[in-house]
Amino acid sequence: MSVPYKWQFVKISECGKYGLLPNSELWRIAGKNSYMAGHVMNPEAIEIAVNNAKEEMACLIADARREFGF
Image 1 (cartoon, one colour):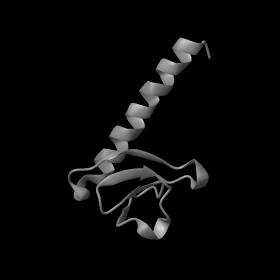
Image 2 (image 1 turned 30 degrees about the vertical axis):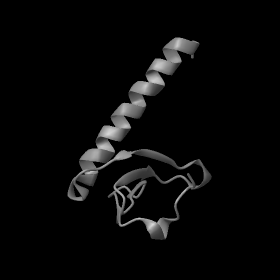
Image 3 (image 1 turned 180 degrees about the vertical axis):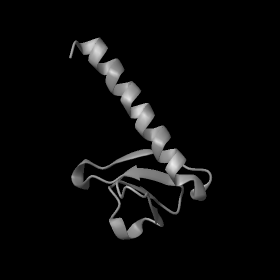
Image 4 (image 1 turned 180 degrees about the horizontal axis):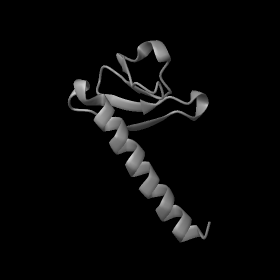
């Protein structure tokens, strides 16, 4: 899986940090450090999907910090 280019996104979030591809993949746009953040069933609900992705990442980071002692 390669990192998509910004022009490939059909929709960009209000903050400009997340983009939606035509195949419903939600990506965090961060240059070479971009990652797929999930899938969106309703493209009109991209902001809700972005909030859910942020919340999920915060939980994963908290778990990793607890596990590895950071």
